[in-house]
Image (cartoon, rainbow, N blue to C red):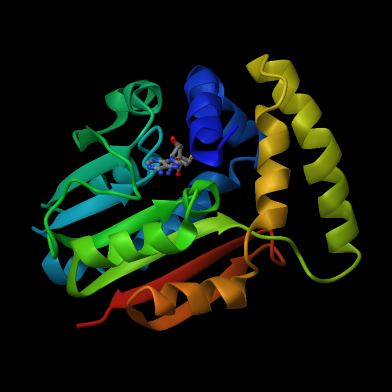
Length: 229
Ligand SMILES: C[S@@+](CC[C@H](N)C(=O)[O-])C[C@H]1O[C@@H](n2cnc3c(N)ncnc32)[C@H](O)[C@@H]1O
């Protein structure tokens, strides 16, 4: 099956258990990492602006941003799986939009910032998705990209791979009752560019000043980029 259809099918199936599994499998760290991403979005510069939560899923990034004291802006949350958007609709007033990140239904330079939390790895065409994000952002606006990575150093690498490749898919199968969805997580992470390469691809898509940092020895990475122009 083509990647786009496969990803859509997986997230439609796991939407009801997605949040619970995220919390369990990341030991609650996913919330902390999203907070770090929102910290770097630069929303304070245009606190009444319009922000995009791209591949928004169950709207955790939107909810994090909306809760910030002083935030007065609007959030548009785009995802191509309506069931994911519906599952998170109680968390935020963000406007849910069913849309494909590879062909966004927004005019150029619409947004004052964008968050892409654990979405990049799932895109059928990463470069096209990044180029679309660049197109809809205003010059000077920031993009924050949060996603999985693989620690480079032993012994953490070995321990992490054992957890990620064996324990996590088995736990995911048990809780979500979906046979393959949680094998997709390690498989897609293996195929995903390393942080330095991802930084290069983000820059190539029309961003400048790309910086990145990792969490917990490299199990997740946060990239911050500014829309050139
Ligand atoms: C791992 S979830 C991340 C959700 C959320 N951002 C978070 O922080 O939990 C990935 C989401 O990306 C969405 N997605 C993947 N490819 C997409 C595309 N081409 N267009 C829109 N959404 C997409 C999936 O439907 C899914 O909801």
